[in-house]
Length: 169
Ligand code: S3P
Image (tube, rainbow, N blue to C red; front, side, top):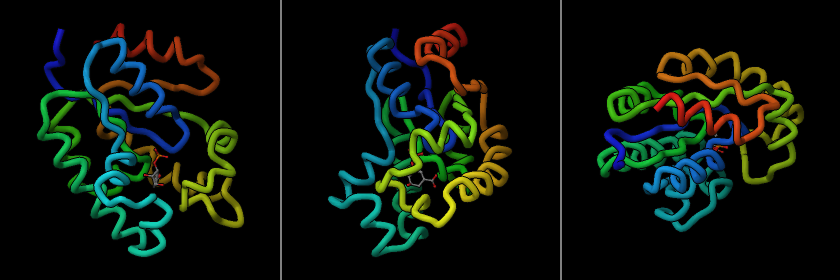
């Protein structure tokens, strides 16, 4: 059955948005877009390079443009980057365009999955744990604000996360 609306995955880095997005697209036989990948394809550059040359604001502008344009496409699965909810324009676009699934996780789990990841420029700090804690404080209420479904993915097998989403739809 074709999707009636986009299914939009939000949540912090390392919560499994891209993995779950890909699995959902297989299960539901619909297309999948990962906004980070979309930005890289459109710009012909990597995310660290964009942060380096254009700064976070430059990256956020590209992110907003990709989100707005992808939301105009026929319904599909959309995995967003962890910081997209910082902009009101993105939050409004997401809420208006789809069913929003918040994949939540703990800072500990995030650190295990992303701690040494060179592709995440915001984590190249002296203290990634502290960085993630500060991000969580600012961002978690914003994810909750836009979410239609909240799933705590912490220590939860992917299969269970998928079951929760599919039974909600
Ligand atoms: C970011 C998360 C990343 C990517 C960029 C910034 C953030 O996406 O968009 O590095 O601000 O949390 P993932 O959530 O897919 O890692």
